[in-house]
Length: 417
Image 1 (cartoon, rainbow, N blue to C red):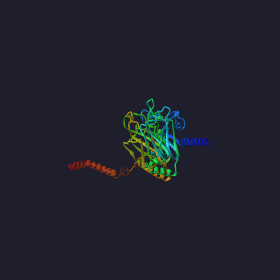
Image 2 (tube, one colour):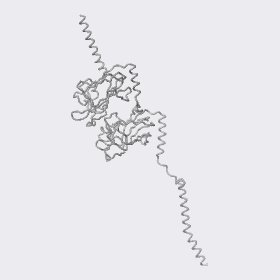
Image 3 (cartoon, one colour):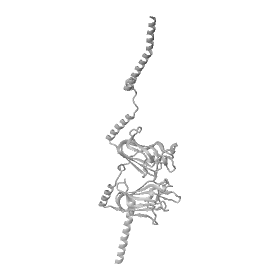
Image 4 (spheres, one colour):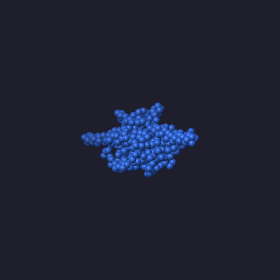
């Protein structure tokens, strides 16, 4: 009887342990949210499939530049608060195709930088035969980001990214673990503007290519690297030089600390090569942001952070493009995935100072006033001198012309006497 009771207790304990482990996985799946860089325009392959518990459904990234393995896609897991993330589990889709090829797994407390977790950078990742791929990250973090830079092909030879499920093994972090993680996050070097919020804006452009959904200017501030704006196809496609612009307009004056430009996917096809950033308060007159003129913009990275040495208070920021890089076909069509301004709402004093500067700059560029009618005011001192010289010259000419006549008259009179 004792043996039977012991066996029952052992089975119950084993069942409790199994339930607890499964509970961690199930609870974790319900505790984090998932965001992705892009999603295929097909209701069957949405990102919600990643956490639905059904391995027969899948998520696919957007159909973009699909003949090129290189990409700039990501999957972001947000646990809502700082946790000890022991492992991330990725389940390939039912066909076991399009699993990420090159990728890194990063962490973050504040959600603005993603340092790589040591040892979790992969190139040509070899998909194993297991039902899921487990990555024992053992990191105290709020966010986990999987950054994919290369894709695998599907049977048709197109490059996409796909997963069926994402789950995580997590536990509550201790106070000491949280404190150490926050400290480590604070020590990460950041470019100032990256920390500032993205300013809500409405985008417009000098021109846009068709179709609008693929190349429209609304794509530059939609937060997706897989969508892009492209200037209209015109006669200048064979020339690097151009005159195109993209304008971000704000609903109220904003204190703009900088902008971030992103090229499409992993390439710099059509990315602005030379450009100037300008600011406005009335949407009609624009002035260059101090120090924000760029020539031969380097393309070693797809992300271009432009910090304003002197932030500007503006109702709009314009990117004026004067040349661009060529696309894969050798055509020069300005193209860009993202253009977003960073900063905050301007204060009353900042608005007043900006308005004063704006009015002064307007005055300096305004057309000259109508010229007064009097000669001295119209022509200035030098003009008056020239006028006087002309009068003297004409007077002398008259004297020289009349003098011989006077002499002749005198001689004729003398002869008659």
